[in-house]
Image 1 (cartoon, rainbow, N blue to C red):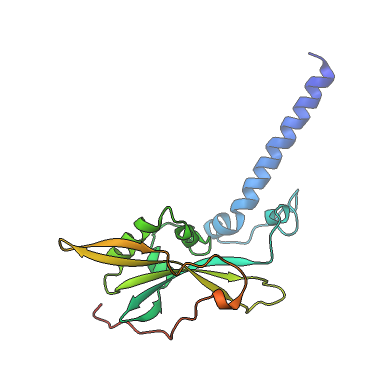
Image 2: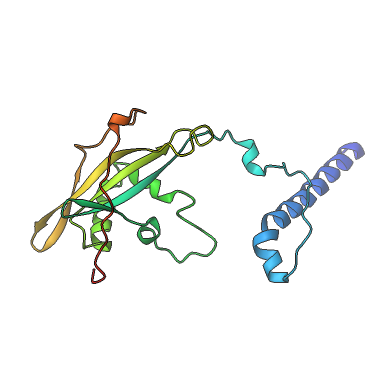
Length: 192
């Protein structure tokens, strides 16, 4: 091989190796290395954009998530997503990663309804809704909400069989008439 090509490949390999080490250092510095060493470590500015890796993505102005409401005696109550997705994983927050939004898909609706009834037997039914904030910069408090589906249950042989009802589901369009007005919150008795 040509000596110039060998020198070029060696320089590129060394650069990539150093960049990988710096990348992993910077990725683990704040959450793992500093608590482990119990001191502040220097921040590297080597090849990292000032806004972080998010700078390379086209991030829109809107935001959406799923909310689940339990229905008891015709009244609704918002269920805390931390109670729905209760996990013990370290360093992984399902709620902030918007993991609950996966239940909006009709492919998982039956399984999710069965899971909700098993996890929260107090409620008669559940409403799974989509919430959107159309412009977090211009109108940060404008919130629009639509029902994705309702989980109802039939009693057969002592078991609650989930029935997914899409009658109230609305195709999402940003018009206030298409969004759900939910009644005030109901407190669940401590015995539940």
